[in-house]
Image (cartoon, rainbow, N blue to C red; front, side, top):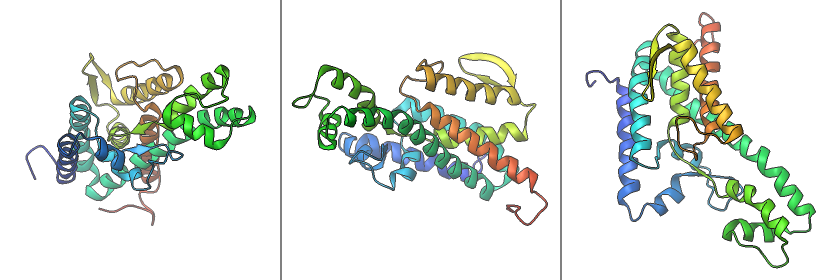
Amino acid sequence: MIRGITDTVKHLLIINVIMFIGRMTLGDGTLFMQWLALYFPENALFQPWQIFTHMFMHADLMHIGFNMFALWMFGTAVETQLGAKKFIFIYISAGLGAVLFQLAYYYFNYIPAYTELIASGLSEAQLVEMFTTNRPVAGMSSSQFSLTQGAFGIYNASMVGASGCIMGIMAAFGMMNPEAKLMMIFLPIPIKAKYFIPGIIILDIISAISGQSFFSPNNTAYMAHVGGAITGALIMWYWRKNQFNKNRWDR
């Protein structure tokens, strides 16, 4: 083990860095992203393996830098306390929880718009053409075109990054170390983990609903953060509740 980094965290760091180098060096990176980023399931670019591969993809150097720093900082502590098996279980489960929450949020907004557009007289083929080209199709009114814009953004959305996984790890850290004092880079004030991590989740929910970003880019998948954190917290709650019965997850 490298000093200060547990084995599983080290391996995850290496995998993420290798994937980022591949994304930056293979061609212009577009094809790599089309294969491995997570696309909206209604989009022709969606493939089932993207549910997992997107967790190891990152958009740019700042994106991977922040995520890998958080993985090292919180992941090492969590793996040390729980062991490798529990750590990787939370990590992957939180990533899947992030997907579930973000796609549910997308569908919550997509289905009403899609249904209204079909009711207005547009066909499914016309909507696919519109979502693919972002140009009005023959016979489409200006009001119909305006209505497609929100659905267009969702249809063409792609998700990359380990943020959902890391939010699950952060939630686990907070539940095991509630009195630990943490600070954000942009807000260097020590805050106890039991307040810090729920605060981040609340900000993400507000950002998802309002579109107002606080400490992250506007294209952040905020509900993925929320889903990852809630999944990590639920797993930790279950383990703590059942730590002495047959459901215990042993190292």
